[in-house]
View 1 (cartoon, rainbow, N blue to C red):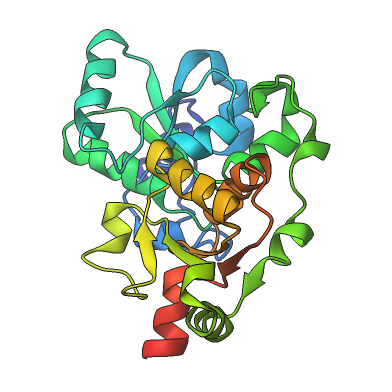
View 2 (tube, helix red, strand yellow):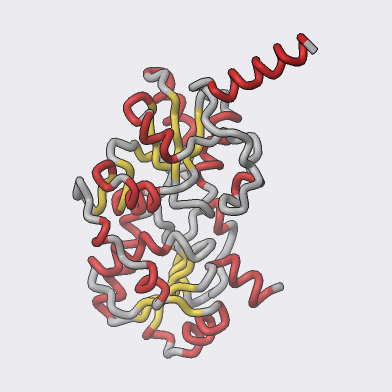
Length: 272
């Protein structure tokens, strides 16, 4: 009995310790990625805010997403970059603080992938803040930067309702893109190299310009404006394009549509 009491006391002290970031919440339905990455340690939102001056926050998304909206003071190291591990190792060599990666939100896996990749490379004391930038920005607007402005005005975030008006189901997306005159449309696959694989879905119609390649992406947006093309754009899950919408609006692109649930939706509805 005495040993049991001591063991319980040790266990309690571990969970109460400041070194423990989150209890085992891997199977929380609101965070589906936690089940896929059960070994990735999690940083909760309130805890990150409390520790903000004592950690290094890294945005694991593309430069486009980062430049649109990011945590104030965060660094941008895209997990899709070939230099990702090298960049994190270089940071770790000069900074021993905890490293916390984040991405878009609860269904985005880049924060988990960045953390796991760092751990697999032997980089210690790394974590994932998986509630994402939207929750951070709406909760802590003074600690977020929107389109270069800080403190940011949450009202300037494009409403989700307006964002959703631009979506077409995979079937309607395909019919519209293939049914229009060839010289009036441009299909853009904006997935990163890990998501895309070898080819896209619309051979002969589409171009590949990942969200991480700002120069190439802007070239196609300029072409759409100049030639009055309708853009049909898809990503992996229908979520990353939310960040692209800011650039589309700023670039004065009038006619554009996104694919509901992105490539995953296409696979489910059109192939399987």
